[in-house]
Length: 163
Image 1: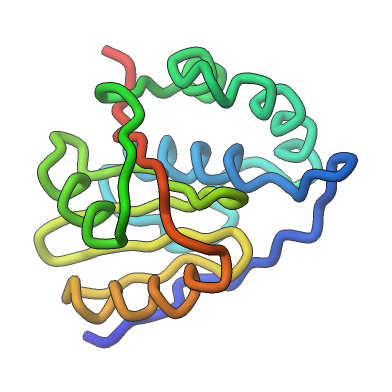
Image 2: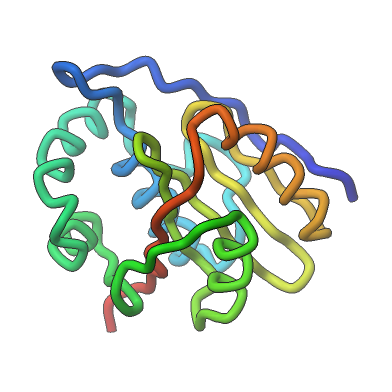
């Protein structure tokens, strides 16, 4: 199965000089994905409208250096400390090795999500959409094409639901 766009998105929200809702919506996507136990099939499954997430992002942005508190606000827990990464391969391999198979990751200016399951991989970017593929290499190429303009990936947070 080649890469399939599940639903398109765009991020047209600003908060002062800062752009949008990427961390908030990536965390919401991760939570909904973990609760469902599989990939989402529509934007409506996120369950929050963009304006609500824009308001939540104003609070989450202040907690960028407090991952546990940031995750708690959306009903998640970090599965270990935030990790410095250097490549999309790091995103894929570290998420694959995790218990949940779900993570958020970021460049200097943008946060996205990744899900690994044996027959289904997903890349979530609120500026482009949700993408799904069976083969890692297919999705990695799509991720590279989309992420490259944002600069290198630099951080990763593995996620889980609270016990």
